Amino acid sequence: MANLREEIEKRRTFAIISHPDAGKTTLTEKFLLYGGAINLAGTVKGRKSAKHAVSDWMEIEKERGISVTSSVLQFNYDGKCINILDTPGHQDFSEDTYRTLMAADSAVMVIDGAKGVEPQTIKLFKVCVMRHIPIFTFINKFDREARDPYALLDEIEEVLGIRTCPINWPIGCGHNFKGVYDRETEQVSLFHSNAGGKKAVEKEVFDYKDPELPNHISAEYFEKLQEDLELLDGAADAFDEKRVDAGELTPVFFGSALTNFGVETFLQHFLAMTKSPLPRKSDQGMIDPVEEAFSAFVFKIQANMDPKHRDRVAFMRICSGEFDAGMEVNHIQGGRKVKLSQPTQMMADERKIVEKAYGGDIIGVFDPGIFSIGDTLELSNKKFVYEGIPTFAPEHFARVRQIDTMKRKQFLKGVSQIAQEGAIQIFQEYNSGMEEI
Figure 1 (cartoon, rainbow, N blue to C red):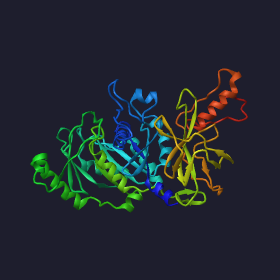
Figure 2: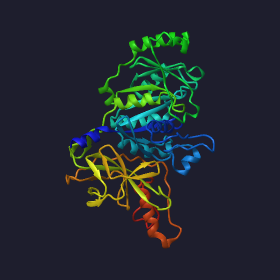
Figure 3: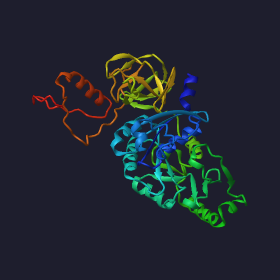
Figure 4: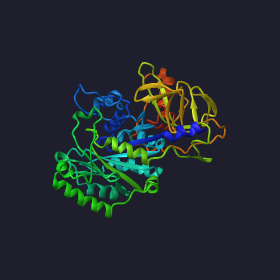
């Protein structure tokens, strides 16, 4: 039990949300870079010869430079085992994001320093608020021209209705971006542009009281920093763990994901401020991650991840206990026992067979067509069900019928599989004599 508790306490599972093109996938890449999971960070947009982002593995993602499907990525950093859920920001794929947020314990909200809070950010933020999960904000692209940091904080508070607590503070922006001041350590990290941001960057750090500091950032910017800090100490909300956990206060960080600046500092603070997996709500009360036997719920089904095998993978979030490869568990909605075969952990579309996994981890298991999104699996025979994953009203309606009437059976099977994946909802007109869906 001690070992199980230790393993679960190491886990941190979070989703990254933002409006399209705010730098979400780039930030994910940099986390992997610092965690040693990749040696060279890819780009989301760029030259044809450029390496693509690890989390954007589908052909459409590489072509369009956007995230279409939620990727699940795991790596270790500083004694913690981190599960990142990189989500699509584009509205067409946002239902996938809503489901993914059900599997996360906290969220990182990425905001473009030049554009501020954008529509898709608001929608996704509201889901985090509904779930009462802690939200951490990374204001990106300060190496380019950006809006006034005070205006950005005001906008977050007014538009999203959550108080802000700046953990670090930018010194200038764009061509005049000098670095950031860490309010906790009282140190200034100087900004150096890292060509392409492909490798981890060495930090040049000065104490705030170091007499050499004004020479590095200029007397003018040092004076401005002094004024800003005085104002922040008097007017900004102090960091309060309880308010952060309740989703009432968001710690704010400034940096530049593309050049790696401020990313590692953010990751270190984030891991110190977030908690290991917490008890989850079921129809029989809260399920403790350590005290209970294995239990999990399916939050995503992905077909054809490997085009050669036409496979289906059910992604599940382990909520409690320990998972062993090949174990037999109760599939509550199916009313039967199932053997979880070929359990894998993902690095986008690369797979690694896992023998063990713990509460907080995300694993993929082979789905022969029996799982649906929201299904609960558990070992204890208590037959509890985790709270459902929300579904949304369809935005587009269409009638579908098979061209070849001899293939009715395959057609129905295919359509119902797409429905199980959550990509479509099926409505049928009964007693109309119509064969359409």
